[in-house]
Image (cartoon, rainbow over all chains, first blue to last red):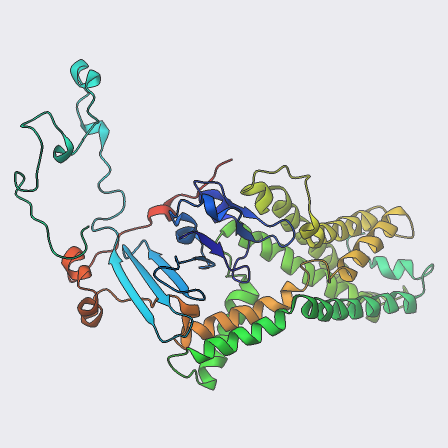
Length: 160
Length: 278
């Protein structure tokens, strides 16, 4: 679902141009407003949607879940740690609201403090393993990890 | 020089009636340009159709008192203090150039209409304010042009590259710069006076092609945006949920399950640091 800009809401601040990892958000030369120059190349990361201070950037939903003429609008509230979506069909009758957590800890609190960790040994440096690699994806102790071997179980519904 | 009326000194060569006529023509050009701009872009039509659409999806009626309070807050926040800018540098630059422009234009009109000749002495405050206004406009404008303009700040283009969208800021800068140089070089009729008149004619006559008319549209757009927040239509944006509200927690059980009944504040995330590629 690539993003697009409502030019009437955009004030041309350039936040989306700065943040777009695909470098496809640019400023229109005549109107000095942002636009997505190549929606086909959009990674759908929604960094621009999150960064826009005026909620001027929207998502164009795929036709398989919302027919043409719909509105898919999103607010990512960093301070609350949630993302809220509103999907409205063109007849206005179907109006869905979704709210989900995007973090359960304050931002940056899980960043490892490398200054407090002992320096890696030569053996660790030569290893193919990454620093702090979760044990569930490691293959070097006791073979393949499964949900069962780690005391986990699948819950019904959406998994996070 | 800083306290003398440059237009009164000019009255020996150019009659006050001609100067006053020029101001009237400029006002007419701004009015005509704004109307043509509105007709061409159909901005007024879009604005009213959009407002009608928003009213249809409103969840509550906004009373007359609330509308008046919203208008007052738009005046205090968006109009007088440029509160719509989230970038503090851009806001400060806009405030400098906006107030500079207003002071410059008003004092120009006052000096030309009320104190057109040397026979009627001009209060020193007026020319002083005229120079201060032009300086504020130049400082805010050049700061914007060299450092804050999105082409330079975000697109990484050189400052000397310009497009049609820069007509407004360039003509503003030229008007204030040539006005100051004209005054500091002794006034009278000369090359700087000609450049001052040329740039101000482009500024007021180019409304149809430039961004000049935004000063009339922006307050209306800000008012309409606040109305949509008050009536619940919110331009189709999701509501501003209170995560501690039991009703919200019942509707979205993931919130209490993963974040607890009283979710804590998570901090700034991507807003903690400004993105800057260049």
